[in-house]
Structures are given as structure tokens and as C-alpha cells.
Length: 348
Image 1 (cartoon, rainbow, N blue to C red):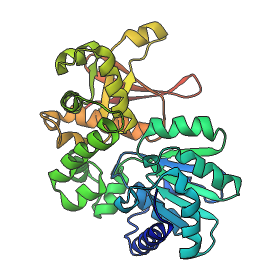
Image 2 (tube, one colour):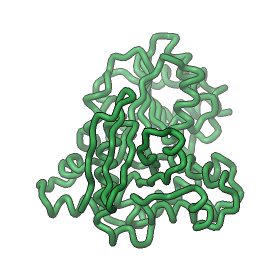
Image 3 (cartoon, one colour):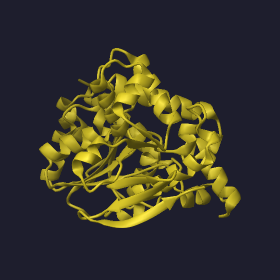
């Protein structure tokens, strides 16, 4: 529980902070997000990829709005029982508004009750979160048909060019392939930033959230997958390579990694569903700079780095992607409406 006066001070402080915050470059996703929807709008993605900045860009469309960041340490005592006090704090601090913006809402248990409460009162709600499964599960059960979801990744190559004011070409593409697209890292070029991000994701989004006792084996598996980005794997093979005794634990850990957006796994294409399930999968990281600064050997293989970038560009636009491997070259197959519609070859 938290006092209303404390909430009011936090609301005022946060609103002052975002008023002066850097809006950054316009993200490519911005034009896709409708500002007048009656649905809850969800922006999901890995930590530090720019979700809060995109939220600020959406806020600029409105003169009257309410904003709250649930990961503010001062709001650590907030529970869903404080929702009514938050509404009162909003109105006392900033008056009435029709637009509500919530950052990292998955930090609050039963957060969907607050969203549903506002939607029932014809308010527009836009929120961000860093856990794909948590967001989709709660929305699917409590807000069926009342939400639209968008994913945000670190900068694309085009966004990186806008951010760094560099020209398109081989040199800048090589730099993008090595450095990736996390905004804060492109500002500082400090590897410690990406290493700390890796630690934060493991600690906050995986180990604490899923109450994992053996944090070391989770870390070792994550490092192994990052080092082997754009390579085939089997769950049995991962168990042996990481020293984890239970294959089921490996399955769980990989799903947690995917839910936190720091990696993706895709199946090998086959017309046989049984064979598709038996075939090795491939693993791709959310960002080549992230993998390069948290692994051993990934940065030495330009072919795998390029393949990872091709996958990410496809994944920005399509949810269902397969790979087909032949003679060492990878072909990506895009599935739309139960039909393979596109094929892309990735080779360096």
C-alpha cells in the first residue's frame, strides 16, 4: 500500500521529468500506432530498446494526459488496491484527462484490472512492458478483444543512421552489424552498459520473476545461446552443453529468455509437423551488439552476424518465420495465412 500524497508527489515529479526528457528520433513504429483507438495499446519489447521514448512521442499528441512509471523505486509499495488513489492523485496533480500512459506496467500484479477499469470509462490507455508472455497471457484472459499489441526492437539500420547522423554505406552497415541498435549504447559506446543490461534482464525478468534457485545455470545457458546466435540447437544438446540435468528446465529457461525479448528461436521448415518438431531449431539474438558484448566468439563470425540482422529485419514485420539450411547457407521462409509467401537467403 502507498499513501495518496506520496503518489501525488511521484506523479508530479514524473510528469516534470518527461516534460524535459529528450524525445529522440522518430521511431518507425510511431506511424503505425493509432492515437484514437478505443482499445488498450500495448508496446512490448526488451528493456532499454526505447519504449519509454516512443511513449513520450505518443504523449506529444495530447495536451491533457496522465503518465505513471511503475518501475519508479518510490512506487515500490504500490499494489492494485491503490488504483483508486492513483486516479485521485492524477486528478489532484494534473486535472482530468482522457489519455493514460503507463510505463513497465507488468511490475504490478493484476495490472489488467486497472486497464479494464479505465477502458470501461471510455479512457484511452497506452502502456509498455518487457515481458511478452505476461502481457499476452493477462490481456488474453482479462481484456479479450480490447487490446492491440505492438513490438519495439532496438534501432533498425535506418533508425541508427538517423540517430548517429551517419550516411548509408558499407562502413556504417559494418558498424551497425558490430554495435547493434541500443540507443544508450550508441551514445556511450561503453560495453558495460550492455553487460549490465544482460545482468538486469536475467535478475529482474527471469530469476526473480520465476523464482529460480540456481541462477548460475540460467546465466551459463544464456551466455551459451548468445555465443551461438544464428546456430542450430536441440534442447538435449543445450542441456549437455550447459550442464543442466533437466531438459524440461532448459525448455523453461529458453522460453523465459524469449519472453524477455533477448532472443528468438525458430523451427526448420518441413511440410511434416512431426518432422518440424524433431528438427533442430535456430537461435537469434535481439541485437548483434548485445550478443557481441556478452559472449565469446560471436563477433568473429561475420556470416552469423549478418544472418542475425536479416532475421531481425524480417521479424520486425512478420511473426512466423522458418529457416531452411542447405550447403551451409540459410534461407528464411516467411509464413503468412498458413502459406509460405517469401524466401530470403542470408550469406556473407
